[in-house]
Image 1 (cartoon, rainbow, N blue to C red):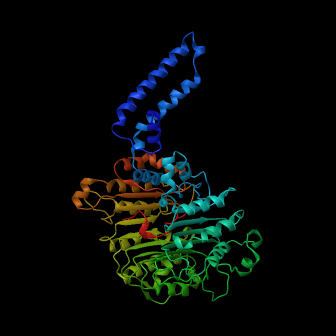
Image 2 (image 1 turned 30 degrees about the vertical axis):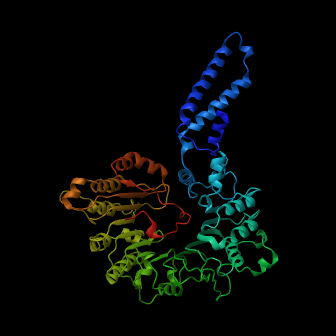
Image 3 (image 1 turned 60 degrees about the vertical axis):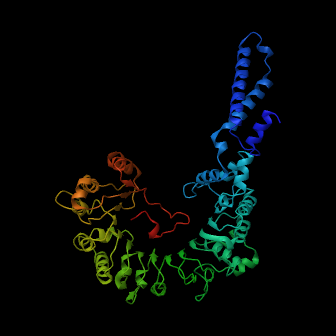
Length: 540
């Protein structure tokens, strides 16, 4: 075997690189460089016409092969390379082009680098256990997805299916293909028109989701034309639109999923989707009294997210739940609830700015105060994105003082114009100094949100009060004096990108350099396989 054959074997990983190989390969590299140098000199001489370009190309190629044989990356074992490849996988939340239906994806690119890499990529199912299906679909979309699923072996799958009402070219074939692997679904995130969701689960049937641990369904509730969908006549006859079927329709898709713990249903009211009794995290929209009361009968729940409520039809009897630790809800639901084990409370509500001085707005703070008094819970995190509460002075005088010993994370929506004086007063009272530990002394995380507008900015007085307070909570000397923690995390949410850039230059960059973790603005949509769950957010 010649030295070039040996180098070729090393590059193809049919023979390992030995320590005894390094000297002679290095010597060959020196000789090949010398030959190239001689050819270059010859090209500059009068005999340039006699230079054999084919010979130069051959020498150059051999030089590259010898160098590659000694390259450090060539000595990495397969398991290390696999970890590197997995690290290179794009986050589908960041890369909108990431799809398992496109043969130009990073996995396929890595498989074409060399035979050794190809072997690693194509024989490691963990490289293929994440399946993202979203348009646009090329003509090879179905065959590419089929190959992707085959390469995932028998591993449990993280599946995301993101379809709009117009993606019909390969829609039926893709849906049927992914449905064939339903027994391996572990995390499922579906965002598509409701008629497609119904069709998929009708085809799967009950008992076909034995490994499912988490599901998130987000259905488009806009009217759809069945003529636009690729359904055969039998399917079109059998399909019952979510939320518009018979009143007593119960969809038992998830009843036989014993590992299912998290369920997020962003679907029409009245969908009749039954859950396995082991579910511990539940999130849904458009609650009515009967639906909410039924959910609260589940003793095993530890987290409940009520994304939206119907206050007109919401009339609950007094309900005590002993196990819920995380609750996201509009304030109106708190009126008759008692949750003594609650650790995190997030209050979300629509912008009530036009009626901040109305009795309705004042009642929201009443609900909160009565709930805290009744539950006697020791909250660690309190996030209030309801201007009717954050512009009520009782938040400062009653709510925060009653929770001062336990609260570590605070989130607030602020109104910097109509409530400027209150904003200044609030953050002045939060400010730490030599003579005051500040309101909520154990604060470690702070989230502030401006109203959803691209023009709203802080007044200079409000800005100075907020960032003066943040700086005071980063003062190590005052923290030692009061034996209190430093502020560790800070998020400032605003739709005004220009203003956010100004704030970064003015103060946020310096705070970050000083060690404060500056969190990114809240996303407009939840991350795939992440959901709205409070116990996964970046809070203490």
